[in-house]
Length: 432
Image 1: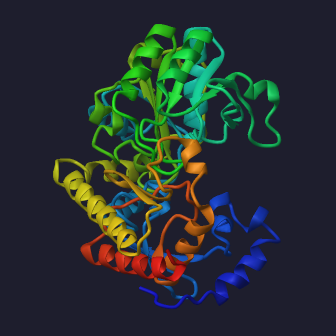
Image 2: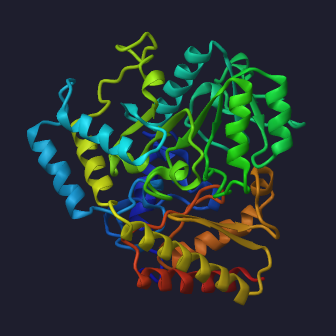
């Protein structure tokens, strides 16, 4: 792994990219602006390592933000993609593999008997919400501050003051009247949940059961059960966004671990094996409202395309049995223990390490983070400096305090040891 960072070619290509891509990137966090540096351009990747165009090598704890639970370029997944590509990249017609993938998901995910594939998590969230509104005849949604469910207009709303506030647009171009149908409350706040459920009739309560878009902020004990109870009492559908947690925290996602089964589930990332694929699913009686079985319209030219389906099937089959998740849990725990120990040794009392199987966040906060307000109160400048220190030592961590780390089955003890050593040096560099 790289000891001193060279970025001459990345800098040159970033200058060129600025002329052709907004901000020089195709997704904002890639620009690395929140950690105060320019982006790194990647040439290729192997297992748990990235190699950039300047020939720097990094231990990759981002893993494309979650899809690569088996690491980069896993031979069986690559072979599956190549075999599918040789038969044709897209048909715009049904394939047997689509049915196979739906069956595999249904076998694993407790709340999914039937699903509809899309090409992105944003599409899947949008479609699940449309279905919930059609099924309930209601309009309003309840979401949680700091939760990200794709760049759907009505979901780009954040919390205001008070326990339950009408959403206000969090981005220019989002009409106020669209955002106003979304009610936003604090995560892990049962009182706010009860107040909102009493005050509004919701089409859906939408939640990441393991929120990972404000950093990983696990649900408090019993909070997911309260979501289920509140949805039932309100007459709303409970939608779990398992784009990140699905097939990562366990074979049946968060719902498989906790036993709290939603009415609809949004899936992505691992389900595509590293290719663009997502889905939403639920019980047959709900999903049969989707066209052409019903009258709720949803469509997509590349939905269920053969390459993504092949990659997803291969990825899921590699997760069969107990050993993959046992290994992933052990890797996550070893990394978390090592990072927490490095912080303690550096005398840093402002570092919290939050973990679940396959997920981790290092928060620069003096107390545990339980909601978005806590995440926002973290020392973002210190995180940025520490993250730059990791990069300089060959460790590719999320370029944002509000993103999760993604341990994979490709990470080894050597990768963990290198990361902990880099973290120790980076802590020393930024001072206590």
